[in-house]
Length: 227
Image (cartoon, rainbow, N blue to C red):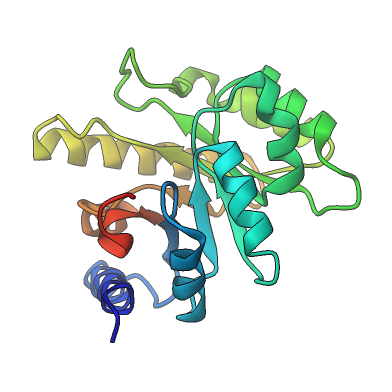
């Protein structure tokens, strides 16, 4: 069994055990393989094991890999910061965008989403710890931006994403995860079809699942160090 195969099955087991411990039904937590800085060959290997959703942060790198892997049925997620001049290609080449943090970006993604494609799935990125150096919206902007998504053609709001401050003590990180879960429930009460809370990575996926994450973003635990 290859290293990637071992890592993949170990990660799936972690998700399964954490879901069971939290009394979550099997299959309710989705794995997003964070494949930025990883080769197309590694993505192909992981896809052959059953993984279908992959996350990328760098547009040109992602487009190159998408071309190499065009024969595979992959669900592509853009998870990195977005420069305005790259929003058109992101709108045309991805299935999900998890890093939406402004009305202007929403408008550009809507304007450039090809009409023949399914609506682009949108997650609003929350800066849950109010870090100056980190992108994302504050909680007070959540409802206005969510309402804007509902008005724009070619977009479908699915939920929220966050990257809590990893430098905080464990109990403070847990508090941040719980705040995100609360915002997610609030959004679900206000809008239809909200089903995705993208929260948790290689080091904290168990805690994220316990607090309500429905999608964990795992890179290092699957692929090893970036190339």
